[in-house]
Picture 1 (cartoon, helix red, strand yellow):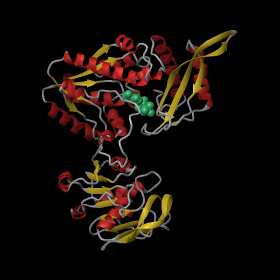
Picture 2 (picture 1 turned 90 degrees about the horizontal axis):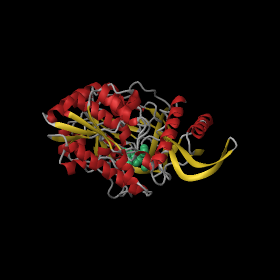
Picture 3 (picture 1 turned 180 degrees about the vertical axis):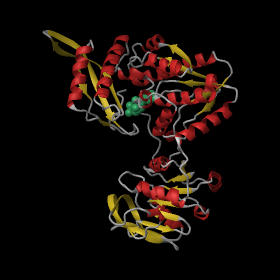
Picture 4 (picture 1 turned 45 degrees about the vertical axis):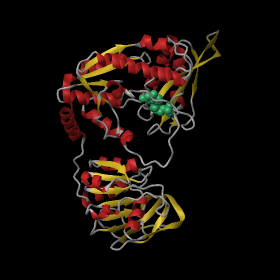
Amino acid sequence: RVLILDFGSQYTQLIARRVRESHVYCEIHPFNMDMESIKAFRPKGIILSGGPSSVHEQGAPFSDPAIFELGVPVLGICYGMQLMARQLGGSVERADRREYGPATIDIDVPDELFRDIEREGVRVWMSHGDRILELPAGFSILARSDNSPAAAMGNSERRLYGVQFHPEVVHTPCGKDILDNFLFRTCRCRATWTMKSFVESAVASIREQVGDDQVICALSGGVDSSVVAVLLHNAIGSRLHCIFVNNGLLRKGEAESVQRVFRDHFSINLIYADASDLFLERLKDVTDPERKRKIIGNLFVELFEREAGRLESVKYLAQGTLYPDVIESVSFKGPSATIKTHHNVGGLPERMNLKLIEPLRELFKDEVRMLGRELGLPERIIMRHPFPGPGLAIRTIGAVTPESLEILRDADRIILEEIEASGWYDHVWQAFAVLLPIRSVGVMGDERTYDQVVAVRAVESVDAMTADWARLPYEVLQRISNRIINEVKGVNRVVYDISSKPPGTIEWE
Ligand code: XMP
């Protein structure tokens, strides 16, 4: 396995993704991980990420220089290379101009890092302000660009390498080959990290952890909780109890489909609690978005606890926490303001005195999808768009009523049908309807109408942190609009939301 030390680059997670795509297991840890832990990790190679700092800055992040004495190969990327140069006795200077974006390099020495890669005019992605002035003793220049006389350096005897550019981004087309050379030639890693091997080891460790005890899991029908449920079921069978709370804020057919897949197809113990009326009652006349979220979150916890309380000797709660939530990110920004409270099962384990099982803690989202395929989950669930915990309540602007939910469900179904039929489903992050609390005048046949407005929201995103509105073809928008106005009673106008995030958010509330 490979250790990635994070110096705060926006690309650190990408490095991990690339390494794992090559079927080598790796973990990201903060740059100041102590030597004992590094040794205990027993890395076959270490990668130092880039970062926003300059080695000249006061308080710049430095790792223990002893990492270069471990006899383990090290690859420094960008800041990681500058740090390596500086800590091993070379020197780093501020470049006259920052180099940002595409560049070409020429490779001087086709050392093992650059084996089987073209020699001249190699396209790479640069993003740096500092550059190496003097190499440390024992190092030689492996590649150069116009602005960086040392675009890559190496000491092949000690197996220490540095690259000024970013091999982990797609704008460095040969980047994957360079990383593979480092992993397989320099570190002599083996490509054994596959989903099949993951399932085997996860099942074994869940069995060991749980022993003869019972486990509960909140199933939402989303990708993460579905994968957790099936994985646990593989490990402990009927000692897993999934609780599915129908809050009445789900999409059309959702509650039925979850029961069909998990109870009927996978034979998982599924406790189905229909609390639609209770949720609606508590949400009556509530219009403030944060209050809606709090009410839904609290009631969910209350009901979940009640259902779980009926089971005996439950000791564990299984949760679909993913790797990006676990990484102790090296953030140079302050704490961020609460924009929206995300309510899922926060606080449950402490309140109920349960121990947590988080079998997806090491995985990225795309790996969870691969795992889902390995476990035989239907593609429909694996590729499903995210759906917020508070459901349709935060897509009904203003008060939530049975009528507004009915309209929203029908409009939502039409949008999804058309997005799927046009082949756009897998290209957008989410596509859904928002019901606006205003009426506008229209004409249908010869009649005047005075009905509600549906806003269509479709966005593209990679991580929901930023998003842009999807450039859906006019024909698709036209079909969505025609169908909603014709088929959904109570709606006479459809608009398309063309706000990006930021400053808009994906959901309206
Ligand atoms: P926003 O609206 O903040 O949403 O841009 C970002 C992503 O998060 C989803 N979302 C939620 N997911 N519980 C969830 O599990 C929530 O309370 C919640 N609120 C928003 C939203 O659908 C989008 O994908």
